[in-house]
Image (cartoon, rainbow, N blue to C red; front, side, top):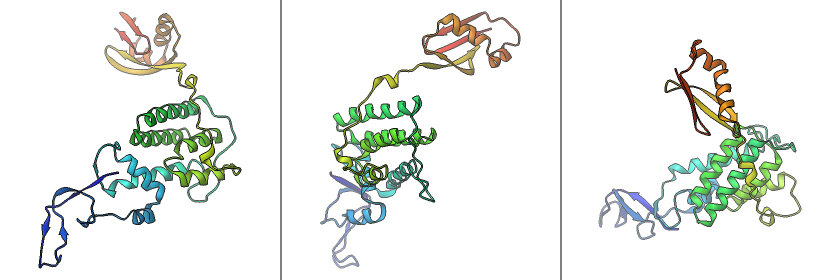
Length: 258
């Protein structure tokens, strides 16, 4: 991994207080002992943890690109791992939060969408977008208040190559004491969990969206039109008037013209 610093105009003082050492101005330089701009990873690990450093290095950008090293953004990956931990434990008390309940359709959708994207990005060696996918998934699971072991356990396996220490600890906490997480099988993507059973239509009345109504994806245009016209919100905007026409575009939009 080649890391660059964004630094000030270089100034070399032979007899000044720098005693011949490299002083930084505004420039872009490669990290080098000769330039006195090396960051010891041990210092970063001591402050943020090894998993945070690993994630942050991958999150900086594509492996093939040079990028500036700036620890101002490392707090983002640190916060992500803390949020991931909170899916398993209470932040203050350390109380267990996970359950053995069966996951619902929304939770399975988040998991299998994540599996699919991670597999695709690994094939492309696009590890920075893998980290982004994890962040989106954890945000979605947090919004769903998902603490189901069936979901979290597969999430641990997906994340383990990128953050091996926290995932190994949580893997053991879930009761998987027989072996390490590195020997667990990679979760299998099931496309059926990504099949949409319903679509939320934006309902336009004279060109302005006034409501959003969900209908089954296989519902006919005639039934969608009937459902729109009997909706309370749409009735309020119609003010008792009969529409001139109703245009239904499947899986796109419904436009009511007065």
